[in-house]
Length: 275
Ligand SMILES: [Zn+2]
Image 1 (cartoon, rainbow, N blue to C red):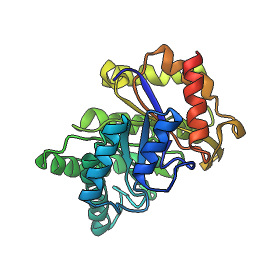
Image 2 (tube, rainbow, N blue to C red):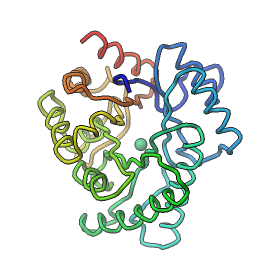
Image 3 (cartoon, rainbow, N blue to C red):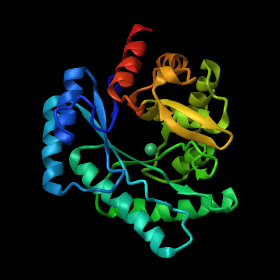
């Protein structure tokens, strides 16, 4: 991959309709390079539809990723909820890979009062079952647990990087905004580069050459994320982050999840290009 591509989490607001194909076409008109398909309320695309999406993405030259449904908890205490979580992730990976998505993002779990170490082992066990199933299906997408913004949510940098080192097919979805909201810090060039160095140390340079990143503005309190905001309405130092990504020659996809979607995606891209 040449460098960093910028795009929206979901279909740009200015797309002709809210269809994935119109989203791809609008992304190209805007000058964006990628888009994340949001299956967050459920995977409601069939195989035939996914094939048409793949054709459009190749024709237009847009890289795709897919976001799994929100209703996933690999640390659920009921076996049927674990199974449903695995099914939702698998279904996203199956349809996503037909679309041509190389990365599948998901929110791994809630602690539900469990000690983090115990939650980690549970998540790892059931996530491993899911990735092994994908391997059997010859599906080689990247499964990317996301860095989460609330302290009640499983998904610290350490947890996500540990899963990425211990499980095949697993790599991080680096949501720098969530990490800032969760910690109240990690909002400066030096802190951003310290994270990049940590990734390089634990996963190798190849991880920086194949990154999946989420950025938005954010409102937060002591418990972490409250809601996403547009970049200019929030305190998130996106210019410093983009500079860190450029200085470390990070490659991959940057997905903007601000409410204004394409406006901030274009702002991030323009910031990157003018550095
Ligand atoms: Zn997410």
